[in-house]
Image (cartoon, rainbow, N blue to C red; front, side, top):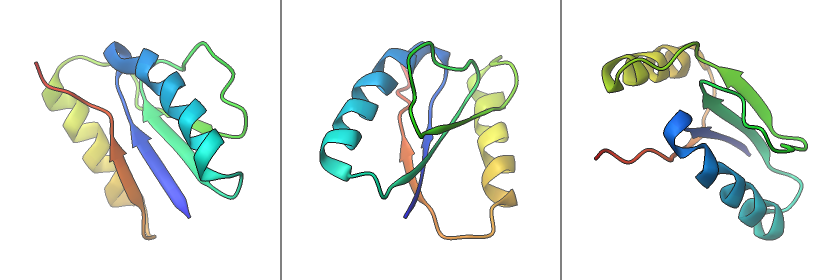
Length: 85
């Protein structure tokens, strides 16, 4: 199963906890790609990271995600790790 986790720089700390939980309960058969801006500073193991460039506004964030997802030609499970304040 392909899983894509979207995040931005303000929630990179949540990503590490998410990785711990998915590794513990999800198993090693998961194909996880993180879609964000700055690469996390912890060991991502087998997880892949794709940078969308520089985070500017929520509008550019959503446009970058849309562009990426439109380029995918497969079924995905999208996990959004984004909270609006």
